[in-house]
Amino acid sequence: MEIIESKPKETILLLGNEAITRGALEAGVDIATTYPGTPSSEIADTFSAIAKYLKKKGEKPSFYFEYSTNEKVALEVAAAASLSGLRALTCMKHVGLNVASDAFMTYLYVGCRGGHVIVSADDPYCHSSQNEQDNRYFAIFASAPMLEPTTPEEAKEMTRLGFEISEELQSPILLRTVTRLNHARGAVVLKKPVKPRGKGHFEKSPMLVTTPAVARARHPELLKMMERAEKISEKSPFNEIINVGRPDDWGIVTSGVSFNYVREIVDDLNLDVRILKLGMTHPLPRKMCEKFVKSCKNIVIVEELEPILENQFKEMIYDLGTNVKLYGKSTGRFSRLYEYNLDIVTEALSKIFKVKNPISKPVKPKIKIPGRPPSLCPGCPHRATYYAVKKASPKGTVYPTDIGCYTLGKEPPLEMADLLLCMGSNAGTACGLAASTDHTVISFMGDSTFFHSGIPPIINAVHHSHDVVITILDNRTTAMTGHQPHPGNDFDGMGRPARRIKVEDVVKGCGVEHIEITDPNNIEETTEAFKRAIGFKGPSVIVSKAPCILLENRAKRKAGEKIPVYTIDQEKCKKCKICIGKFGCPAFYYAKDDSIHIDEQQCNGCGNCVLVCPFDAISKKKEMK
Image 1: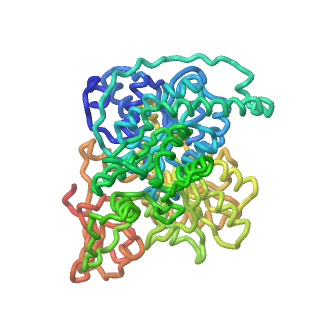
Image 2 (image 1 turned 120 degrees about the horizontal axis):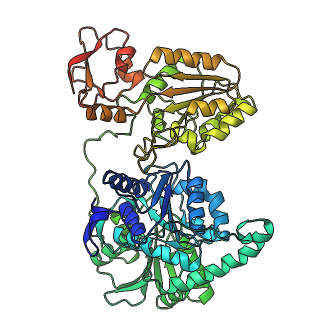
């Protein structure tokens, strides 16, 4: 593997996420934990791949890695390692920090011994998320030092040096990234990895038990730590002032990926400005910022999402008593919505500086190209489950859903998702709907979601006798984020054998009386199982078990098996359109003569269409893929 076998001083191309992993390895990380979530997934997946690669070579990894059951557990496991003197990294997507926040907020009071870098990968534009919250607020909220990289190279270096900063301050730190950085690929110069510390030692202290008395004593220490962090920020190589041309009275303040746009556009527009590039953005290097403010008459703030830097510079300008004019979100120059790009920033800066925008406006195509929304894969067992549920459900049934591949069941023609808040919310909202309405309520969650945060609401449903049907779609993996393992698998993130936890055993232990296990690929039996569950008064659970079709077919190919494909007998086909209009498998398509066919390249050979067709028009072809 290039990421671990390349020599120091070599330059290799890495994703931003891979660069973070490399930075942790160079810092001698001992333990890495996560719950997978895009856009952060590849950080942990790289640790996992390295561990498996070394295992095949007969070598022992220098670190311990795990896919924890959820982000809170991931943070707690790594925090304990750090408090034992080891270096730890925890990575998650931005909403994962919501889950971990209960531990995170108090962890800053306790502090750490070994360096601990916590990666929060934000998702402007909601590429794969239910919101686009700005987790820079978490740094301010918790008094956590924070770094924001602009490139994969800087992401690697900030991770590497982040451990040193963390240990100097004896505080965990945030490394805040965004999708555009996590998934960018860039040149990274390697350094020699530090040898990990191996086993740690936990030193007992009454100040680690956060009773109210301890918390009162620790809060002042937290504020003092932030004062020391500000001194580090003042000297940080990640904060710098860049003079472009012959700057006079104009300045631009920016951070993270926004700096990349600013730096390119300033050259394109031939602007004479000074740029304050901030890499350690909490706490701000106040003296450096004040000096910058005093050198300008006009300041433009370029930052994605919330006006966090802007508000801090407003306060600074007021405190200094200067007449600096500020251009940002509050003046309508930039939006608080979505991620920025070259076009957006160029348009804004060209108007502010009153120069011609060199980027021509895009020409609208004469032909309107149809959208291509994401959909469940051909052969996905979730589709069969949804189809069976729809057949069994009375009119007016409400379907709370959850985070995962199965969320795509909201799309036509299935339309099997009515309410979604966060991971694990399906069963909790199902309880609320049962208590407050007369609707039949059938909720859906995946197996990984079940282990993440789905168990407490099931216990709640049992204790309060809520009349709900809770569906657990067990496809044996964490599919949407890249097929990572979870407690329902026979192996862990390092490829080692692990004890498999059966979903149905846990559900039974929660006190659920009506439990049925179904194979969704048997649509008729699954339909009948849901009818029985709907008829049961009180909470019932259906565990719909079938492996992800991608994993199943991958295993077949490795075993040398061929995958069947299906075809439609055009003489038998009555064009009832159930296969497309109700079942919705994307492998079906209309020909120019309005006849219906199966795209053999997309067909994954599940055969459910044979069960769906009422006229026996679909059959398996003799040829196999």
